[in-house]
Length: 258
Image (cartoon, rainbow, N blue to C red; front, side, top):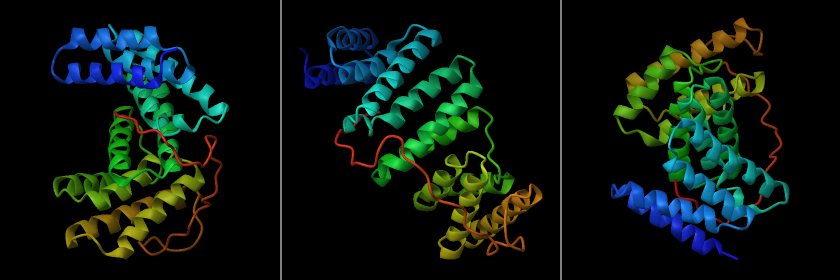
């Protein structure tokens, strides 16, 4: 039986070849990984990388979907190794769906990936990469969650330009977790309000943030989905932050390379 080290090594070799522009060599490594994989975990990993050398968008969807399906099998039996992989697998699947023209399906998978990131408590650097990838993917699908506004997107652009990664991570995390439900929208507004109260931003960005909160608050009140009075930055009530993690709460023990 092929060990995960062997399958992982083939995938790493393929990725190195790909980065060096040797795409044929990369494709051969990925295919060898698929041919060698025996266990569900090995097959899941190999399928994810095999998708990188897919001939067309349909084949890419096929391989990325397979990797997600195999990950679900592993999660069902409590294999903790897959937990850390899940957001990356889902992002790859969502990206393949988006390229194939299935924007609505891609949107739903990106939102699942956002949930997975939230449940994993990853280190800040990796979480930031995943948050940004999901944000860009959701934007490409046309997704605008309840509470988002032109002021919010203006703030995102400003923070990107200024390399303000800390505040950017906060608001992107809140954005991609906002699936449009009452609770998610309330948490989104609450996060913006907490950033406002912290006073970390420069004067202009702080002012834009205040307007973003006011706009979000008005949207929620207009739909009858917010409690409390007022529309200013300090007049936001906290939503229900409860939830169930279908993939468990154990610490992942496998590092995955995007």
